[in-house]
Length: 300
Image 1 (cartoon, rainbow, N blue to C red):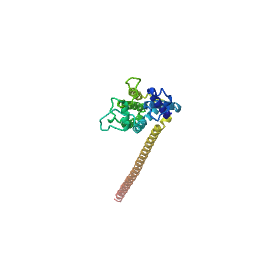
Image 2: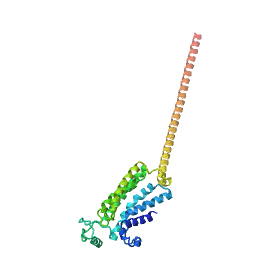
Image 3: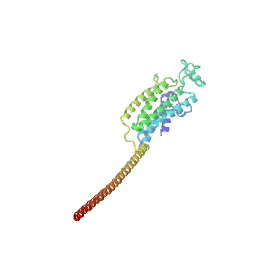
Image 4: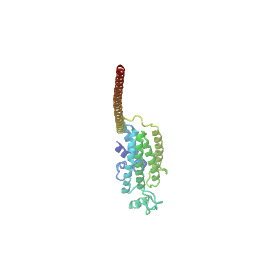
C-alpha cells in the first residue's frame, strides 16, 4: 500500500500543479519516463498507505509513521542522486567552487531564457538535499532510540517534518524547476514546507504529552516489552540468588556461633568438674586430717 500510493501520489501531485502540460493529452499522465514525480505527493500518498495499513493490521498509526520516518531520509538521500543521473532539478547560477556544469544544465538554463547564464555553473541542489537527508537520518535514529524509552509516540515524525521542511524550504528557493500555485510566484513546495514545519512542531508537543501513546497494541511493542521483561526477569533472578547467598551466609554464621557456644559449654562443664574434684579432694584431706587429730588425742 505504501509504495503504490506513494508513486500514485507523487505523479498526481506533479500533474495537478502542471496541468497545462497534460490538459491537451491526458495519456501523458501515464508517461513517466520523462520524469514528473513530486516528492511531497509521494509523502502524502505514503502517509495514506500507512494509514490504511494501520487500520488493516490494527496498529497505532503514529507508531508506524515513527518507524518509516527514520529511514525515509536515507531513501531520499539515495534517491536524490537520480536527479543527477537524469540531469534534472538544477539550482540557480553560482560561482561557488562546488557549482556543477554539464550539457544538461546548459540546455536547461538556455530553455529558461533571460535571467540565467547557461554557461555558468549551477547549485547542485540534489547534493545539498542528499547530504542534509543523511544528517536528518542520523538525528532521527538517535531520537527514536530515546523515544522508545520515553514512549513519546509521534515525536520522530514531528522532528522529521520540522527538519526536512526547513531543508526543503531552503533548497526549493534555489531550484529553477519549481511548481507554482497558478500564475503566482508562490512555490508549492515552499508553502508545503512551512506547513510541514508547523505540523511537526505540533506533533512534538502532543507526543510530549503522550497523546499518541495510547492504544498501542501489544503486538507492536513485543520487542520492547520482551526486552524489558527479560531484563526484569534477570534482575529478579540476580536478586533471588543474592538473597539465597545471604541466607546461606547467615546459616553458616549461625552454625559457627552454635558450635562455638557448644564448645564453650563443654569447656565450662570440664572446668566445673575439675573444680568439684578439687573440692572433693580438699574435703577428703580435711577429713583425714581431722581423723588423724582425733587419733592423736586418743593416744595421748
